[in-house]
Length: 279
Image (cartoon, rainbow, N blue to C red):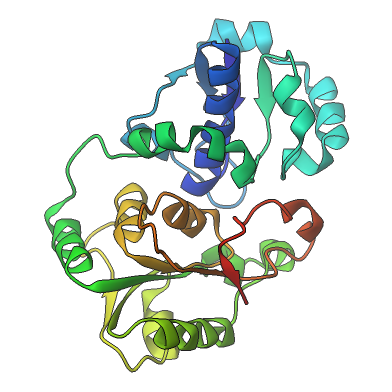
């Protein structure tokens, strides 16, 4: 049995799941998820968004957690040893005999060996809602480009902003210029946690659709919509990273920020696949 602790939003949860899925495939063991940290925290509280996908994992029981979870002090030491909560690619983790893992595991190198499995599992259990299905129809029938603008706590929480940074509008305008030079008739589908800001600041000269659910937005459905676009302009966000990664267009263009993080940039050297373009 392998237990992976989930924390963060959907993008982070997908990286944690992907790492656990690789380990269980290699070790022929069962994958369990520790969801005890979700719904808590001083900042943004996160839901168990993975539950909306056809994942191959169960929730760890209290008894299983008690048996396999290391004591808090030991866990703290291991986190320090494994470089800031296992952010990037650490090959030695793949030969570990441990049963409980906590970290972020943000690298395509953990995922490429099982990408085919992930493509079948990161699919929705339920059909798209009517609003999202309408957007999906437009995405499929056009030369679609997903544009993800992440603001929220990256823009307004000073502590988080100092670490993760907010990608400025210049990045997006440069990315749009690159797309125009490569595609004849792009249609932009803009996804953001601050649609009003995006509408005010993003300047386009091609058809642009701002995706904003009439009621509460659904992160799982929006990620799938983004992945259906033929091409992606992503933020320094694991959410749009995953949309680009599971995009199955063989000729996709993915544009990503060269600088991903203010504090731990060195740990992200294996985050972006080599065929993605950076600005």
